[in-house]
Length: 273
Image (cartoon, rainbow, N blue to C red; front, side):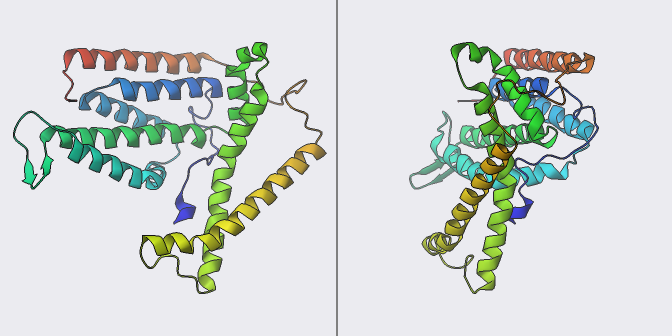
């Protein structure tokens, strides 16, 4: 169900992960993504996966959200696996030979590796929004991009747009689910027929969804104007971002893990073709 999609949602808490400086959380999340692309063997992926599971446990968010965050990208994972499975060729004999279709060991290994990498990527990025409020995320992005202000780059406006877009993903998903339920109650067949029929059936859903999205955008703009919002110039903040010892300890742990992954790549040969 659409309502089970958790992308962009924030779950309040008082765990050590919630209390980390949002600027450090963005930097650590980017470092984690880089680590996933640096590693070239399953040992490195296993280390990254165990690390992220430990972080989820410390955050108190709940491991069941891992599976919910993966639901929207299952078609992408399936397409990635199929493409790598049939288009990666190996040097030895194929495992399966059926006409012009050949499946090699390298194709199977690459398919699994890419699927696991994408899953860990989504899991890691989802944790950032799970444990960081939209306001803290906006302030962190603005502070990290503040050097660009010297080039007259609209840093605050960019951070605000990114956060608003991320914040309204759950709202639009909920609105879509309501519209689809209303259409089904009126006799619309959204889940039957072939691919073309299902695509045509979505037209009565998309039109009211776009109308609702523009209406919400207009209401948001009106509310911001009523509160005298004039951008980031001269804006004050109720909560100031402050880094502490736990932030630097987390940064040190991720740096040690990064070095460990590099050592694994050097001592264990890559299976990638």
